[in-house]
Length: 126
Image (cartoon, rainbow, N blue to C red; front, side, top):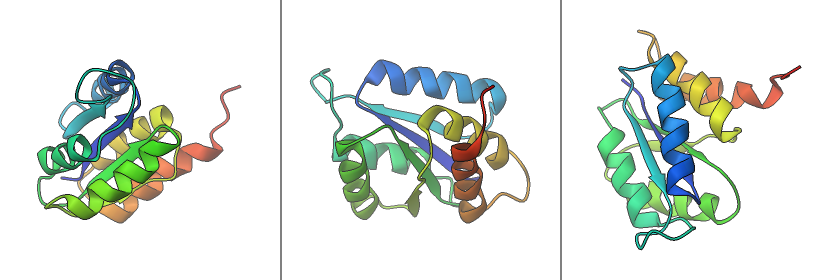
């Protein structure tokens, strides 16, 4: 099964997004990788890489990020992690929910799950 890692500058935000996505796809490996190791606001490549390895069940991991330096640290983490992972260019909450629902399906691949996350960019809320 494809796993997901949610990266946010806030540990609370990352955990909340994982909580929402888990309501829609409880069996999908979802990991929050938010905040700095000291509890502050920020992102950390080591934390993200550990999250990627934790979420990996052999089919790869989709990484969703909030903004700015999260992208840079997630790219570094993808290189560091002992797992196959790809960043999705998607809104973090909507992308995580779309990706989680898709990943719960029997035919989900890493590429199709990234696509599902990225489809959230075009979703209208009204």
